[in-house]
Image (cartoon, rainbow, N blue to C red; front, side, top):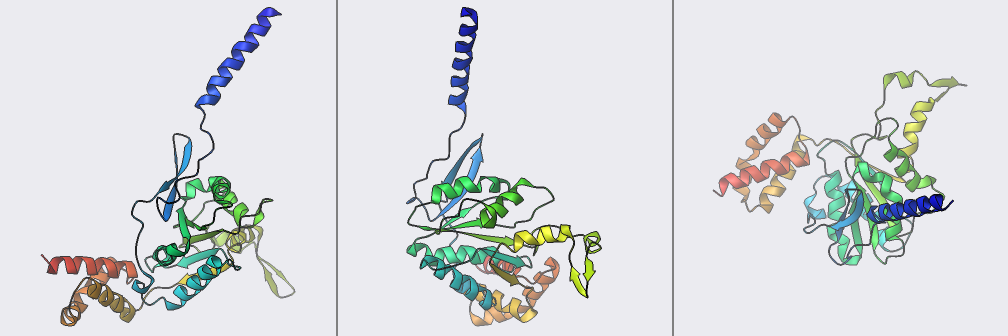
Length: 287
């Protein structure tokens, strides 16, 4: 009996040492250190890391997406005013300003208490822990998930779905989710799934696989779609950035044909490609 008691005592000491090495819950960061934070998990320990130099792109710098800017701006101002606002899913063509728009909103409203927390897809399973840290804070937080997409059965899919609409614990009023994706429904869609659709009294009823995929995107109250730019829109964005980089009107006009060739080589007339051309062109002219 005494030997058994000693074994129990030794086991308790071992467990105590193991518990001391296990990572504890994430601690709140210095909220005054930045307006933007990243959720990072290293060696089993998670934390909110301040971003030393947040992206400072302005809303005025984002050209030819006026309707998208208005909708995101209205939703964000409602959120900051303590009124009803929606989680947002920004979808569409690559390089058209989805991520830049979210960053520009932070730059516009950081002075009014807006904060941004970037969460990688692999860390979405930690969303309940992140939300717990933000509960009760005076700031208003956007949880930003960039370039979001899922494959079948990913745990992060269920975690995001739960935070958006399906958890027994309510998300605090000072938190919204803004996500960008090239996929409207965030998951791959296959032709075979269309064959599951049923026709009932002339109506089309999607199959279970399709319904499951739609169910996540539907939990975002606001959908904002982005589309490829026309040639004139692309050239307008090039001109904007060349002006911002100090070029005169005649130099901007001379750059027109080169800008079109640049887009042709890249196979895209996106805002990102326009910005990249302008940086290259302005850099070469100022050598």
